[in-house]
Length: 264
Length: 262
Image (cartoon, rainbow over all chains, first blue to last red; front, side, top):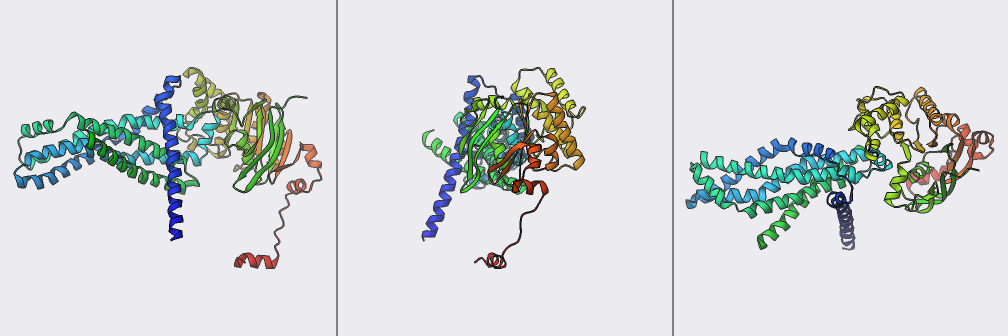
C-alpha cells in the first residue's frame, strides 16, 4: 500500500516537473514571438519560411488525403442513421459542423504531430547530442530564439491554414458521397452545408488549431532538448514527443470543446 | 606584471554528492597558450564548460578581464561570449548547413555586414585553416581532420580574444593531429590571441603550451612552464609523463567480496 503511494507520488512529481519545464519553455518562446519583436529583437523570418515549407507545404498531400477519407467516413456513418428517418439531407449538417468544429483541427493536428512534431524533437535532439546546441550557446546565440521560435512561429501560421484546407476537403468528401451514393441534388446539398456551418463553428476550429500548434512545437522542442545519451535517447524522445503531444492535443480539445459548448 | 585575462577563484562544483572541482584558483595571462592537462574524468571538461558559460559552478567566481562571468546577466554574458571562440571535441559543426554557412553564422547574426562582405570574410577564415574552396561542402562530406579545421575557422569567425579548444587532436591520426597543433601555433602568431587548451595528449602539449596546469581529482597539483613540468619530481606528474598505469592489484578477498556483493 505504502509502496503504491510512493510510486504514485513519484509519477506525479515527475509529471509536475515536466509540466513546469514545458511551461517555462513555452513562456520564453511566446515572449520571443509576441513581445521581443516590439523591443527591437528581430524575428528570423528566413528560418521561419524554411520551416513553413517543411511543416506546411510538404504535408498538404497527406492532410488532404486523410481529411477526404474522414469526410467520407462521417458522411457514411451519418447516412446510415439518417436515411432511416428519411433525413439524408442532414448529412450535410453533420459533416459540415463536425469537420469545422472538431475533426478538421483535430485530424490535422494529429497528422502534423506525428509528422513534424517528431521531426522537431529528432532534429533538436540530434543537435544536442552532437554538441551543436552548446556551440550555439558559445556563439552567444540563444537556442530558443534560434531554433524553437522559427519552428513555433511556422507552426502557428501553417497549422490553421492546413486546418482550413482539411475542413474544405473533408466537406468535399461528404459531398462526393451524398451526390454519388445518396443521389442528393448537388445544389440542395451545397445550400444545406452553407446554412449549417456558422461563422463561429469555423472560428472555434481555428482557435483550437492555434493552441494545437503551440502544443506540437513546444512538446517537440522540449523533448528534443531533454535528449540524453546518443541515438537511443533521440529515438526515445521522438516517440515521447508524439505520444505526449497527441495526448495533450486531445486533452486541450476536450477543454476547448467544453468551453465552446457551454458558452458559444 | 600583466593583469590576467581569465581569473578563476575558489571554484567548486559537485554533481549530487560527488565533488568534481574542489576550490580551483587559476590565472591565465593575455596572449599565452595555456594547457589544462589531466586524465579522463579529472574534471577538466567541467572546468572548460564553466569557462565558456555552459555550466554554472556550485560556488566560486570566474573573471574575464575583471568582469564576473558567473554572476553576469544573460546580456552581459552574450557580450563576453562574442570575444570567445570555442573548438569542440566533436567539432560540433551544424550538420544541416554548408561549411561556408557554418563559418558565416556568427558573423551574420552578430554584425551588420552585407552578404558579399560576409562571403569574403568566410573565404578568408577558411583559407586560414587550409580549406579554401570548401564553402559549399556539407560537414558530412569532410574527414575528421577537415571538420576540426572547419570548426576552427568558425571559432575564429568573430576574431576572438580568447580561443578555447577541447581536445583538439582527439580522434585524429598522428599526422593530422600534428597538423592541427601546427595550425594552432600559426594562428597564435598571426592573431594576438589567448589560447586555452584542454587535453590529455602529451605530444601536443609540449608543442603548443606556454604554461601547463595539471588537474588531478578536482585540484591543480601543478602549474608551471613545460620546462618546469619536465623537471618536476611530483609523483603524479612523473606518473603522467612516464605513462605509468595505476595499480590494478586488488586483494583476493576484496575481489571475492565484490563479486558476491558482500
